[in-house]
Amino acid sequence: GYDISKLLKETGNVTLDGGFTNTASCTSAITYIDGDEGILRYRGYPIEQLAKQSTFLETSYLLIYGTLPTTSELEDFEDRIRDHTMLHEDLKGFFGGFPRDAHPMPVLSSAVSALSTFYQDSLDPFDPDQVEISTIRLLAKLPTIAAYAYKKSIGQPFLYPDNRLSLVENFLRMTFGVPATDYEVDPDIVKAVDLLLILHADHEQNCSTSTVRLVGSSHANLFASVSAGINALFGPLHGGANQAVLEMLERIQSAEYSTDEFMKKVKDKEDGVRLMGFGHRVYKNYDPRAAIIKDTAHSILEKTGGGDELLEIAMRLEEIALADDYFVERKLYPNVDFYTGLIYKSMGFPTRMFTVLFALGRLPGWIAQWREMIEDPTTKIGRPRQVYTGEGERDYVALTDR
Ligand code: ACO
Image (cartoon, rainbow, N blue to C red; front, side, top):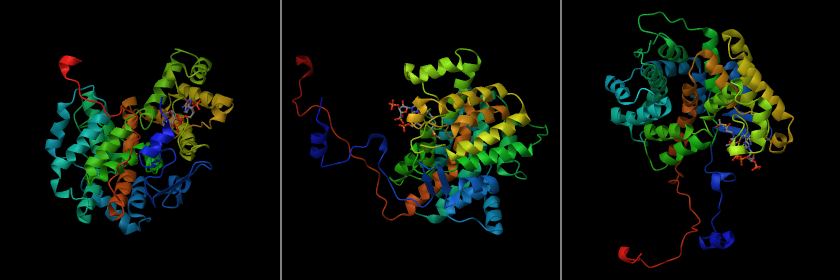
């Protein structure tokens, strides 16, 4: 009931782009995406090469500092992270305040937010040394926080980090190990988790990264900004999609409805049902990360066993979608989340931990983007305009006269 072009003019000739489908919010030298061609590069390096040859911490270094590290730079980076994996004992106590059945994502974001209270010596966004130590603390502590959130949910005691292990080995041990019992870390699982973390490490101005930048643009510290990013990632249209995919596959497996019935619901948009793990704002071609993950899904599921039936359902859904006009016309292809849940499940992660794993992977991207934003002298506080569509001026009516 309003004339949008008139309102736009009245607001001072602003652009209205809800969902920012066509608005760049910043310049960035970190990640390049060509959605039509299905290309993803971190600092110029194709994702396929990094997936094959790099490690998560090396990729983190690349994203944050802009270059591939030398051997000594990488060792130094890994050592510094190793020095900070412990959580303050009082922060450990913090987990006791959550209900046992709490979802680990809000536990994660709360604990990261609480880091601002424990490390008050590293909150100045314009002191490079403080930003550096906050960076290391976050990279080191997030896996510990994530493992504690999980242990809390299953009522098991926390395991302290064992710094003889790598970041991923340590995370797996703290998650699945039991005190006073040896935990054998399977190198194939470590490699697969490391790969998945690399694939999630950055994706330019997605919802959570834009959130980190927007919060940081007010000069909020790195912990506060990343905590906000974790909350943005929690949503089912973003990082929460990996959990939603698995729940969808399990509903089909439990014969709540057949694959064909489900696809009909999706195409009829019945109750807003979507094929979770499909579609992407930027990729209008196959998501290059999904292509790599699909191969990993096969090899890991072969190793871990179980989940085969779910993988078959997923492949059947993909097959139907790729040959169906509804999906083809809308350029809907599997995204990064379509196969990840299956892999995580087969490794023994409960569904609620899937998005936490996404957060662990995305962390270096959030940090790199926040630092790029803070270091750019042209950055202004993020403050979009709006187009007002409400009432014109009217006089207040006393309560007794309404
Ligand atoms: N299933 C069925 N239909 C879909 C799907 C889907 N997964 N995704 C989009 N569509 C349809 C929409 O209904 C719409 O149809 P219409 O033109 O008839 O109205 C059209 O495709 C365009 O969809 P939009 O919602 O406008 O696309 P947008 O770019 O806003 O959304 C998004 C992208 C959120 C990823 C969407 O594709 C979606 O909801 N996918 C499922 C959730 C998901 O997998 N999210 C993970 C994204 S990747 C990530 O965060 C790592």
